Amino acid sequence: MRIRWTLPAAEDLESIRRYLELNHPQYAESTGRTIYRRVKALKTHPHRGRPGHKMGTRELTLAPLPFVVVYTVDGDALQIVHIYHGAQDWQ
Image (cartoon, rainbow, N blue to C red; front, side):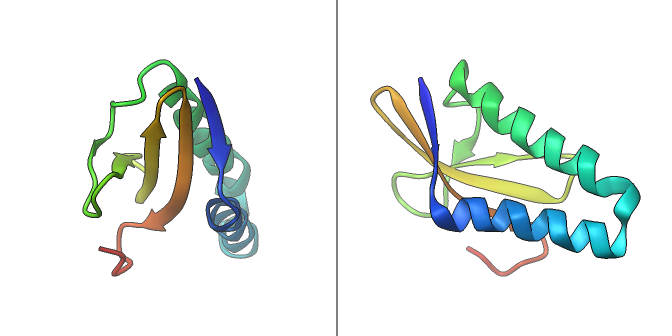
């Protein structure tokens, strides 16, 4: 299964990394790696996430991190749509 990142999702990941580098530099690298690693694990378990709030999407929570990855599964491709902070009003 291939994983494709949409531009908004890639920007979300970069925004998270930038925020952490400025405000909590000790967490920036490890958080970015954790998010990327958890998304990569979807290759072998694409339906791991719960059904999403929007039809056709799934949501992977990244506990203990406060982020939710919204993605779609279509055949042999998985598309990362967005990464939201749990405190955001994104539903």
